[in-house]
Each structure stands twice: as structure tokens, then as C-alpha cells.
Amino acid sequence: MAETSKGSTSPKAAAASSPPAEATPAPAEETSTQPPSAENPAQPAEDFHNPDHWANLNEGDAPAEDDADSAVGDDAASSTESISSSILHYRTIHGRTYHSERGNAEYWTPNDEHHNESMDINHHLLSLSLEGKLHLAPLKDDIQKVLDIGTGTGIWAIDFADEYPNAEVVGTDISPIQPDWVPPNLKFEIEDCTQEWTFDPNSFDYVHMRYMYGSISDWSALFKEAFRVCKPGGWVESYEASPRMESDDGTVTETCAINEWGKFFIEGGKKLNRTFEIIDKDLQQKGMEEAGFVDVKVWDFKAPIGGWPQDPRLKQIGQFAQAALEQDYEGYVLYMANMVLGWTKEEVSVYCAQLRREIRSGKFHPFYRQRVVYARKPE
Image (cartoon, rainbow, N blue to C red; front, side):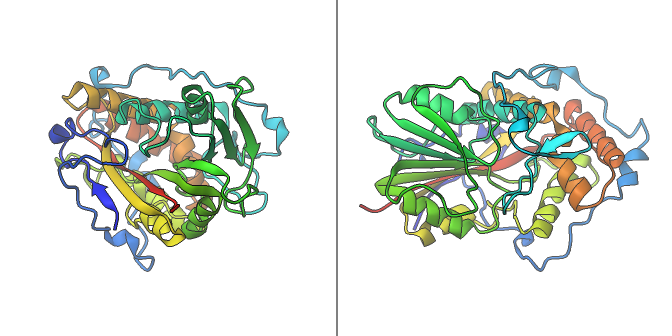
């Protein structure tokens, strides 16, 4: 059975929560892992507010923005230079580019520079949450070969290749949005992880993947492929997040736009057969154990959104989380709301404006749950 370290349940207690030491997760205050009723695929559809609800909100009903609690800056900076999108034929939806529908590969966020900057901010958010660590699995200093599935902009793979200059690092993705200038021990390849992987069995010491939610229809198959390519004694590590924004103090209620956010992804995932409820359904741990991995470790933690926490470290994490959203609110939700659930572009924009006002106001204290799971392939 997996060893589990739970993140704390209150913003004040969360300040003491730290990533576990490698291979020995440190105990923290318990967070309930009982899956909510949304796990049941037969559950009725989420109860959305009518899109007109957000447009009809009176100005007096909308919370005022508080600059003191806003994100780290008006413009999120990025060091990533994308490869030209002309390499592949991309879909264009309301002026945003998405990966083309070739094979079974499909992803719900744009792959343009605007959204890539948001992904890079999320990388720094996660780095803060992990206190600078790039992994929790107990990797050897002389690790030889590493695979990063769903590498995105490649920022994690670049950092890992810098930290382990003697390791060969391979990053794969369905879109070639990675930079040209990378460490000499790193290369990127176009590959659809929902198909059989092209790598030889027993060829990698470490397989890393994160934020695959909404893109995988068969999580068991994903981890079976990871098991196949992993060397005996090697490790797999998976990072996922809940689509829901929640609060512990009752500030996020059924009437606010913050509460509506997760519904887009839960309902959209059901329609696409690519779930976002990875944590609620415990798909990481189950998939690893079914594939044959052992020594499974689980670490749950919460990421605040906005500068509302009193703890300086959590406040900084919350500011980065807000900055990632501020960079591209519409990019995150447009595909699900518009293409899957039928909202117009204008309705999405009005909703996002209300969400932005609520988060900037400082009156709400949202967070979202994250989970890291890592495990070893038997010798």
C-alpha cells in the first residue's frame, strides 16, 4: 500500500507544509482523500449558472479590486522562445491556436506564446511549493537517462538537464513549442503519449510527467507504457492538480465565479472522455500499482490563489498562481466553455472578467489541491 503524506487543511496550518524528503514523505496534518460524488460517471451534470448571470451582475455586486492582493506584476515574464507554429498545422479557435486533431492527440489549452508564458509561471509556482526541488523521487546523482512526458515549453526538462549535466534528457510533446537553445544533454521529440511509445523497454532511469489532466483517456495504459520503458529500479513521478477552486473558510460560495471554474473542466472532461478528476479518482496511484510499480509515495498539498495568505511563502505561491491565471484566463477555459459546452466567446469573456474581479478583490481565499505520486519499478 502506498505511503501518503497529506497537505494541511487550513491556510494557517498550510504554512508548515513542506515537500517530503526524498523517498520518505514527512507527515503533515491530514487532508480528506474521500472522493467527492463527482467521481461517479453517472452523476448529473454540474449545475452551471446561465452565462447571462455574469453579465447581469450589478457593478455594486462585483467585489472591488484590491491592488495590494494582486499578482506579482501586470505582465508575466517568460524566458521561453517558441518554435514557429508553422511546423505543424494548428487549429485556430477565436484567434487562439491549438494542437491539430491528428491521431488521438488532443489538448484543451492553446499552444501559442500567450499561454506558454502562463505555463512557465506555473513551473515557478510548483518550484516554490517544492522548495526548489525538481523531483521528489530519490534519484541517484549519476542518473543516466530521463524522459519528460508532456514537456510543454520544456522548462522543467531544461532545468533538470542543467542540474544533471551528465544525464541524457528527452522531452516529448505533441506540439513543438520548445526553445531552440537548450542544454547539450537535452533533446525534444514530437510524440503522442496516448499511443504506444517509441522508446525501447527498460531504457530510462526516471519518467516524469505533470499536468496531463484533460488529455488522457486511459490512465492505466499511460502508466503501463511508463513501466515498460523504465529500467528495473527506475522511478516514475506524476504531478496533477484538481480543477476546482475551493476555500476552507467559506469565502468561495456557490454564487461566485470562482466556484464555477472547476465545473467547466469536470463537465468538459466527461464529454471528451478525458477526465480532469485525477486526484478525486486516485488515478495516479491506481495506475502505477496496476502497472507493477512498487514503493508508491503520495504527497498532497494546497496551492493558494492570490496574495491573501499571511505566511510569506504561501503568499508568494498564491501570487504566482494568480499571475499564471492573469496571463491567460480565457486560454484555460475557452476550449471547454466554447467548443465543448457551447458558450459564446463573449459569454466566456464576461465570465472571466467577473472571475478576475473576484480574485483581485482579496475577499475570497481560494486554493486548489495538488498531488505528487512517485513509485519504483522492481529490480
